[in-house]
Image (cartoon, rainbow, N blue to C red; front, side, top):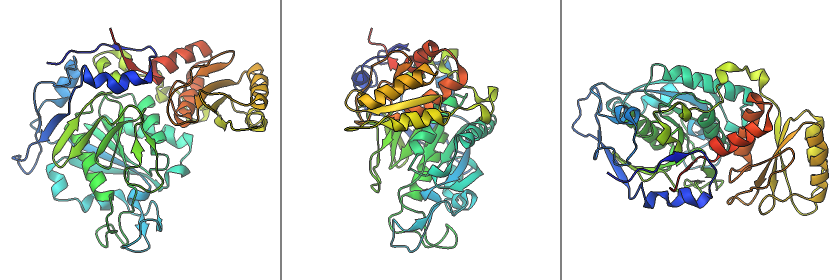
Length: 414
């Protein structure tokens, strides 16, 4: 069995997580979904005894072969995956959020029935950017309610803000069961229903089918929320959209993918650090939304710095009632002089700031009066972390600890 790396909750250089696989998660670890299964259920068989070396009774129990069919609930919010195109030969002219998930799942049957017992909840049917934070709150509770009886949940959504959907669920869902987000870069079809006139080269049915396979396998138990698109499994915290049209749009920057799904084989090469807290209460975040209502979620915004940037954006957000502002700074998080002046005025009035970089990689570690270091969180993810921190504490020092413990969880190197 590989050497186990103990989990710590202290900030460490981002490159650490990228190379941890050489010590502990070496190689690609594969799990095969058995082909010789009975028609009514699927058998999940690990290729080896806990090959990731995770010391967790709960993880081993979850991933052990089962005699019953796994129960998976697909919660649909719309997006391109449910989109109807103007013709079978177009990838870009379509109406997102058209088809219903129940009908989409039916097109995958009977093959789907040998993978899992799948049901659906039509949470909504819109483009991902159309959802509010209050609806995010409701989505978390919907996922948690589904997981009371299901073994795993798949959430389908548009790719434009899917990384925000995924990270929000990663921070707020109080269940260790697998949560997978997925979608597509090309619409499903051009017919009246999803059972006819598929768009040429659509990635929608394959992504939905593969996401359900991963959910049924339980291999991401205690990983938190993961994102699956283009056959790749990515950690919600690390992943970001990098291209407006390419099907390989989601990348995890320096960290790399968690794994892949190739046909009936799920390959995992690394795991998020929190998995090693699987048997501990430390696995859970402080952000239990059953304790707060959607109206208690504060206004938090993002302001970008650039050459000669004015302070009006920060001042305007402050005047509009924002209690937190993320600055997407140049380089390691620098902001213009005018923005700095506006920030100081807002801090004096109790507004919290998080410093991040607009570069797309690397970190911002600057802190100070009213300012929290965002590390290598992207600005949009730092905003969600700040929003939740402002919801659950009035102590900025406690929020700083949360940004280290939950915003940048890492493996220890001792």
